Image (cartoon, rainbow, N blue to C red; front, side):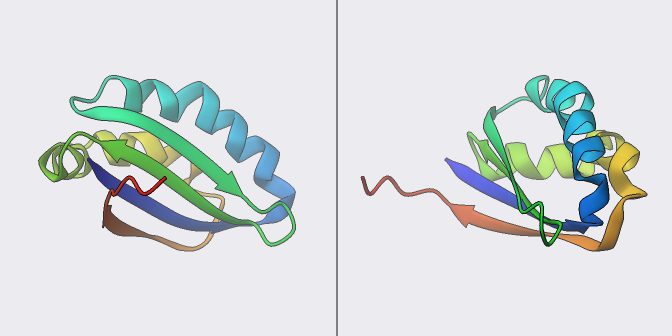
Length: 97
């Protein structure tokens, strides 16, 4: 498994709007992707920081999603709410518990 983490920060006043878009738009795009396993959206309603975690079968599947244009299509509706540019971290998944 391979984990991709999108780090974001939005104005906390817009967190409900962004999460609505996440549920109604972004999840639909993710679910169509080859190799997508599951995803999580972690938010801090006080600071506006967010961590969007997606789990993939392989690094290749996650990379393809990013480069295919689907990633940009997914985040374009929320891009206007970013205070700082989002950045992506990558992790190999290990089961320890």
